[in-house]
Length: 270
Image (cartoon, rainbow, N blue to C red; front, side, top):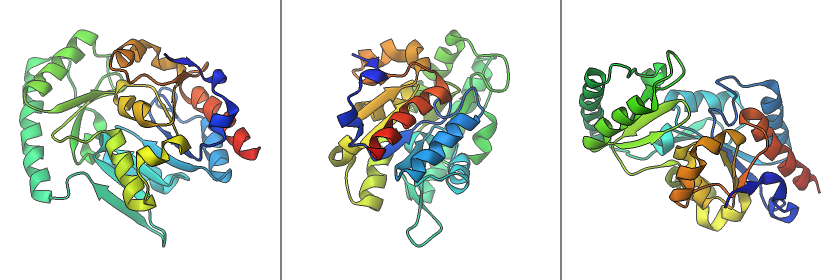
């Protein structure tokens, strides 16, 4: 059962030193990164917390976010890739599928599915950030046109799934790919490869904040899982999969992220 974040015990939060979070409508608010969320991000960094963005956004976005903000890593394309800071400087990458030949073949198969969606669903449109994607395709739901109805979104998902793609939906996109990765599997790989500890072993040190169905696996595996208030419209679906967050903030989007970050920072200070 999901309960207010205000009820999370201080002694539980005191163990957290890794703040991992979704980007769209979790860190940001309707596509914009407001000053309060940005300040909380820097304050958490200055408090010594490890910060990792875990997003459905493209690989190109992932590399950009890592270079621009005080993050230790960015998991992009719903777990397909990870960008991380090397100990001696520069950016390292982790691929879920290291074979470029396989990636090229999957890209051709995805394109065939995309063509089918665009020919069968008149409301379907590709997200602008597809130009920077390596593993998946993203269909826009709300960003650059009339909101796509739930009915049309369901039709898009059905067509993609019928061709063998894994499908995940965020607050802004429908993402589809070939492969078995998800957000939590790449977070686990990052922790193992870079920090030498599994997600399960480190779970009591991890707080994850998100707002969508594609955050489900991280909600299930983080020691402290929090949905920002705008998660309410998908909370029932997450609960049905037994992957709902433990806690929910009072505030939505970036303000909800701040609600979590501020309590974590306060408990680190103590």
